[in-house]
Amino acid sequence: MVVFISISFKFLKTIILKCTYILGRDISIFSMAVFQRVFIFSLLIFYYDKIDIKEDLKHLLLDGYFAAIIIFIFLSFSAELAARLSFYNKALEIFIFPIIVVSQKSKTNRLILVAIIVLFCIIGAQRILSIPDGRLIPYHSILFK
Image (cartoon, rainbow, N blue to C red; front, side, top):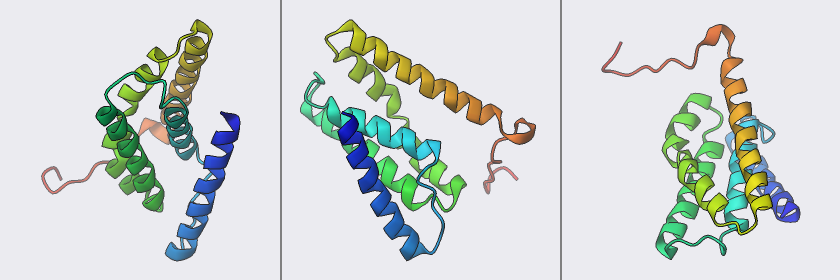
């Protein structure tokens, strides 16, 4: 599993470096948001055969989450745009985590995956709480000025 994650991370790094050359912008591959997405996608691929749901739903989860990663990476020169356009597919984690945890036979593997999920939640909450003055990116729309 570690080898697979390492290979997928190197592949993703190559893609991002090509995009930075084309776009002429600095895209950080070492951000926690990119790491979380790649790690969860790697877990989904690694446990793909063990997941006991319909094949159509598995393909939908895999394709949707991959699309969210691609959207986030290609639009990461604008944090606001990347986060908002990839949010709905990133929200698939709500379904992906329980499906992967339930697919595990041993309780040890389940416990390790739950610990990883809790760690990601703590890191995400810490990132949000560390924003200066407790403010998030303001949402501007033509309806509410």
